[in-house]
Amino acid sequence: MRIDAHQHFWRYQAQDYPWISNQMRKLQRDYLADDLSPLLTGQQLQGSIVVQARQCPQETMQLLQWAAESPATQAVVGWIDITASDLHAQLNALQHPLLRGFRHQVQDETDPAAWLRQSAVSAGMALLQQQHYVWDMLVTWRHLPELTAFAAQHDQHWLVLDHLGKPNITSGAKVWGAQIAELAAMPHVVCKLSGLVTEAPSGQWKSAQLRPFIEEALARFGPQRLMFGSDWPVCLLAAEYDEVAQLTQQAIGTLSQDEQASIWGNTAAQVYQCSGEEHESVFTG
Image (cartoon, rainbow, N blue to C red; front, side, top):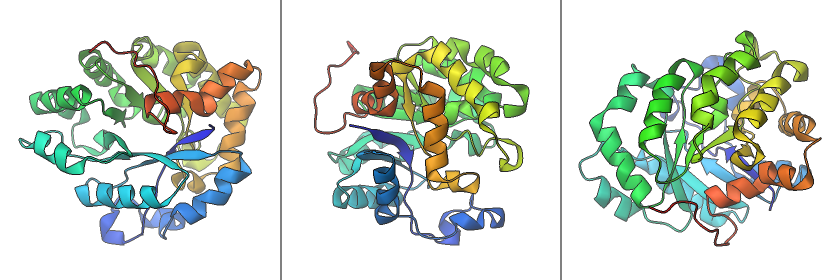
């Protein structure tokens, strides 16, 4: 199955999405499964992973409802307060066959490094991994050192780096490769080839500028730990859906069919347990 491993759904209300500024007017509308469906079909994608965009349990419940009504939605990455004292009870209340992971917008914390070092975060992560939930990691390149230390402490289940850790495009792919090297060497860390077009300065990007980052990701992670993600509809701020998919295909087109299949869905299917298939666990814990 070919899978878009990173997309969002929302019914837009300004107060619910404070991160969507007036400079992002294209995002100030509803984006739902019926909008995504023809885009998936156009790229011969059969499924997608929907990821949280609000830090509240209500959105997670709504995403699960929409996912249950959308045959293409293979899994939900929701939000939960992993520092909560009643985390175990909250997880029990949220149990759903399509809920495969969680994400916190660490990049938006006042001090992302301090957030990652909290003992309550560490305890919460231990419980999530014990229950085989994936954790999507959202930080910028500025906090990759702290994220690397965090990932080293939590190796009992998959950790997924969103948007390549939001690299500094101006600094170039080799600088990013050095920043990511230690994190990429960890076998439980997977990276999404997503979000690059909106990281380009002023949203003005060229394929020749961004492809080296995908090539560097291939060198650091290998194709078996990479997955395509569109970051739709956020990507629309800088590119059409087809352009985002084409950027990835151009960068990986010389790989073997099996390697390309990993990036276009097999890795996502393994990590998020998609398509009703049982995938052998790589974790002994």
